[in-house]
Amino acid sequence: MWVLTILFERFIIMSVLRVFSAFLLCFFVTGFSIYSVFAQENVTNIEEVSDSDVDFPDESTLDNSSDQPFVPSNSSGTISAPSAIAEPEINDDFFDANDLVPQGEMRSSAPIKVNPRTQPASKYVIVTKNHDAGSKDAQLISAERAMKLGRYDSALQLFDALYEINKRDSRVLMGRAVVLQKLGRFDEAMGVYEKLSKIEPDNLDVKINMLGLLSTRYPSVALRRLLDLHEKNRSNVGLMAQIAIAYANIGDSESALKYLGSAASMEPDNANHLYNMAVIADRSGDFKTAISYYEKALEVDTVHGAGRSIPRDVVYERLAQIR
Image (cartoon, rainbow, N blue to C red; front, side, top):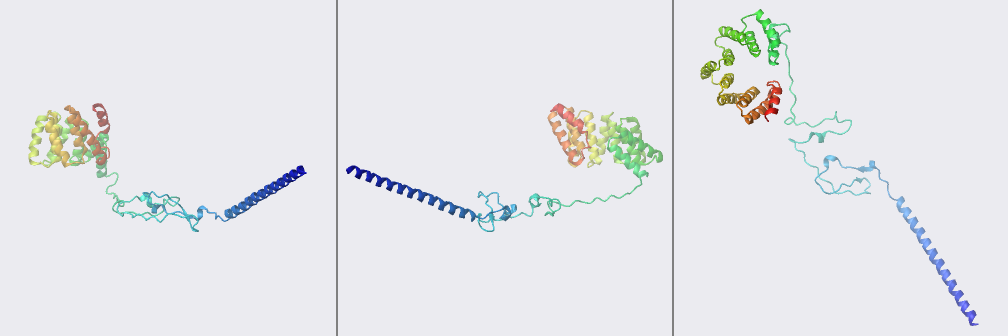
């Protein structure tokens, strides 16, 4: 009898455990289902935000010095943005014009703000035709231009043709004399200078050029005459330069640099004075001073001489040797 009682108790216990296990299983399944439905409803309520709905602030209003990260905001307020950043003030005198130019296809045609003090307008150059191509004045201008470009043979041909037309034209005679001097034809150049000095005895430029040519062969004689002229014409820059060359020809580099320095101070835009000073210092063995003058001559020639007033190739080659 007691055996039956024990079996009955075990059956009751097992039944209760099975019912309790089934209850727990139903409870967990029901809870997971309710959670899934709730999560799905929340996902469907989230508003989709596209790039077109987001209002990005203009780049010109951003303060790059702020350490606060940038967060975009849309019209519905789903994503919050930081407080507004103050727009920086633009200085009317100094600003980067590129910041005012729109980016994209309209960049080249869009208007921009221009400050007349920092971006002045271009000047118009009006060219007036004063002479015909075959006129005497036009040929004289062509000859002078050829001489400036160093085309001495072509310039001499033009001056010779003009000389045949009028042998007493002082402009033609001066041009022929200078070209002959450049070509190293000493006697012919001196003869033209002498003829020109008879036509215009008071022409100081003729006297200076003639004495400068004379100093290449007779520097002491030319120097005395140049110094006599300098006593009466102390403000003539060309006379100072010729005196300096005469001093250099007799070996007085210190006096030569002194007069050329005065000429360079009176004509700071003339690179030839600095170039001659460099050559004189170079010949005297003062390479440090020569380098300084060569470099200054190149700089002035670039700014004021369009890179053609001194022999730049010769200067660069010499600098490569003495540096």
